[in-house]
Structures are given as C-alpha cells and as structure tokens.
Image 1 (tube, rainbow, N blue to C red):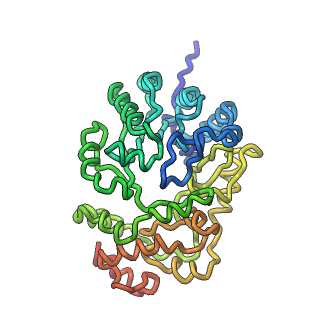
Image 2 (tube, rainbow, N blue to C red; image 1 turned 180 degrees about the vertical axis):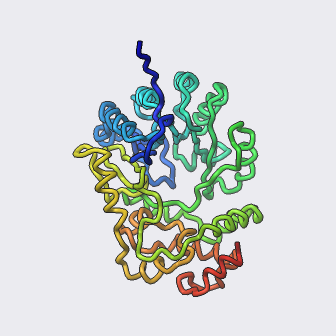
Length: 381
C-alpha cells in the first residue's frame, strides 16, 4: 500500500534556491480609512477600482503558480486587505497551499468570525497592525474616519482574546507626535512585541502620483525634526547605525537596483500587474497576459540591469558612500519625479543630517565629495 503525505511548500528541500520565495499581494487599493499620509488608498466604495480588481479565481491561479515555483511566504496588504469579500476564502486557500501569510491591516474589520478562522488556521506569520494614535481625536484626525478608533480597538481586543499573534506599528504625524511614549508603553504590553514598535515618519509620495502628493509634502516632517525623533534614545540609535556601517559597501556607481527587489520576490497590485516591489508601479508585467515564471526569468532580470543615466544621479548618488543609508531608491524616485534615477532632495537632506549628527560628514559637506569615506566609516564603526 502506498501512503501519500502532504507537506507545506516550506518543508521541501530544494536542490537550488526557489525561483520565487516570497510575494506581496495588494488585494485592493480601497480602504475604509482615508489617512492623510497614505501613499496608496482609494475610497472604500470606489466601484471602478473594485470592478478592476483580480477575481477570486485569478488570485487562486496566481497563488497556485507561486507555490509551484517554491514560494513559501505571502504578504496580504492593501489598501485594507480585509475589505475583500472573499478574504477568508483566499486566506484558507493560501494556507492549504502551505504558504505562511503575513497580513498588514488596520484591524478595524477583524470580526469574531475572522478571529476564529485565524485561531483554527493560524497565518504562520505575525499579523502587523498599524495604529494611528492613542487618543480618539488624534487617531481619527489622521484616518479621517469617524468611529475608526474604537473599531480598531475592538479588532485588537479580538486578536488578544483569541490569542492570535500580532504586533503594532505606528506613524508619527503632528496629530500624534506627543503620544510616542504612551504608544511604546502600550506596545510593551502586547505578548508578541519582542522589541519597540517601528514607525513611519518620512512619508513616501503616492505610488500612482496623484494630486494628494501636495498634501503629503505639507505634512512631512523636516530632516531636523526627524533626527530629533530618531535620536531620542541616542545609544540605541548610534549602536544600530554602527552595526549598519559595518556592512557599508562602496558607492554604487550607475547600478540602480542594489536591493533585492525582483530577485526571488515581487509584488502584485490589485489589477494583476507584477512589480519589482510594492512602491514601484512602473515598469510592471501584466500577469493577465503572461505568468510569474516568465516575468521572474525574463522581465525582472532585464529591469534590474537598468543603469542610471541622469547626470545628477551619476554626479551625486553614484558616488555617495552613504547611499545605503539613504532611503532613495528607483521606486521613490519614480513617486517623486516620474523617473527611476532622479535624486530625491528630501531623502538626501535626511541622510546628510544623520551623517552630520554622527560625525561622518561636516556641516555643509557633501557625501559624494568625500574622498576618505572608507577611513571615516572604519573609525566610526
């Protein structure tokens, strides 16, 4: 008699590295909140967006192919992924394929039914919940959604009641800037928080490059304000930077994609476009006209070989020894300017302020002009 044992994808021993090991899927751009800083959200009842979204069947086909390519991890995000009426069906289907699921959510749509599903069929990864404030007033001034504060609290309480592992993350905006200590104290009471919560504070512009970009620019904190927040716990901050400096590489030259975007992973938007990462909307590959394997073996490798041509990038970023510390990347360049290789002054200024604080450059000195950068990094780290 022959016995067959089903195993999740992650338990298989691959003779070589899987072609795809992780995938991000934006189930929808729609969200029940309308956060003032958000780079992605569309209205909850945007019928045009909803009609264009991948169907349940299309999502299942993509997930099946991902599993066949060795993918063992998927992140469901949005918008608010729980807005999808078929979320539970997609979730269970994905877990049956053997993939771990990471969920990014505002928690406001977590119901008792969904908590029971998570309890019976654990996601495999810790759920990540973003909180926008510790007070109803600050929270809802950011989400622009009356009732969202208590809806999120209810969702979090359900996760706690059912013992579903989750962590919380925060954003720092003028409305909640004086609540960080209270937030960190609260976060320390969550059983699965092994370290202080992460924050978003240097906000990216809209991935679709629409009119909301002007609002986001207005609410961005200055580099000086950001450094004051980063260095609140000076010793921890400097220790982290020193560890990071120990892995600094030489200036990047004209190579644009130095990250892992598109290398064994990628992001699918709600309409079937396969992207190198969540933020980079273009160039993208239409999965309705092709498949994951074709993209991973042909389209993505070609994009990753694209070189910078912008003279400003080649003069500055290509010669900057702190490029690894800078948040600029092709995706952020495109969000800001519509190109992949235009320097983003905002992130450049933030990096220089950090470098000045750490003593890696002098006031007014430009990182791309420093000749003895290796010596400075070695002395610092």
